[in-house]
Length: 342
Ligand code: IDC
Image (tube, rainbow, N blue to C red):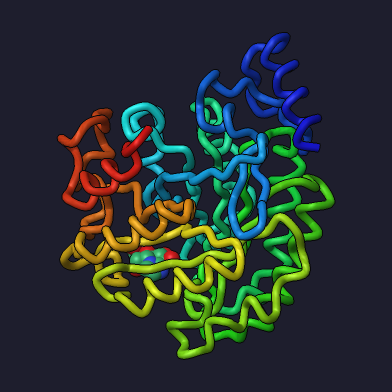
């Protein structure tokens, strides 16, 4: 299947100009990923044991950024900022953070689905993976949104199934809910995606705000003892280094030996995404993730006033995003870690 897709992508690259999204529920043409870009080189991703592999079966680590909630910070996700992310930051992946509540998807499904379609095309044009984040947060039980998730992911998968650079993240941070409930949500939603896009990589959040239950005082081995019944699946782990220290570092090390893990959200600040940066602690996590090739996306690619937002306030109203000039300390730090060893 991955092989078929790359042939389709190659054929499209040869004979088709870059096509936009077609109307209605039609399938977008396989796009020409820029030659040499991460998504072109690595192609369709596949879980290999507890690691992530590219189309050639080699282990790969993706590094990139998460948007802020697109209902609030869409002004930070535009031509100039995405150009900077792809070419100056050299990111492999853009996490598109679509909240469900708090003025997100549930308030206008059509509008938010279309926004995500657009961002997927923008990431694709720049050769980045598009990580589609179903950013449920409150209520913490993902089953609250199962019907919405099925509707949304069915359309996303239908439209983009010919692309090799889509990653589906079906639950940002389950909280106040048992692992068994998260697992049954995942088993309800994943078949909807796989019916359209059978070989896609799917991510699922874990209980305790994607800490494998640690933030809920649960046993972190619960997930590996009761895995989601689906293949090509990774589990997500989140941390905020000022608050989540050695016990979380140890937990990440432990669970990533047991199951495939993708860190879809982290910061070097407090769990609020604000307050002082602890780069010493955050660097320990970076070292662990780099040495084990754990893929990651950092929170967040906006100019929100909080310290964890990478751009200085006001940056997003302009068109200057490259270099260190527009960055807060957390932005300089994470840009360096994304650019490292490219
Ligand atoms: C924060 C946003 C903030 C928003 C709040 C509630 O920065 O503007 O008011 O969410 O929606 C998470 C969540 C992520 C949080 C982030 C920082 O996934 O939505 O963003 N965080 O608090 N988990 C741990 C930290």
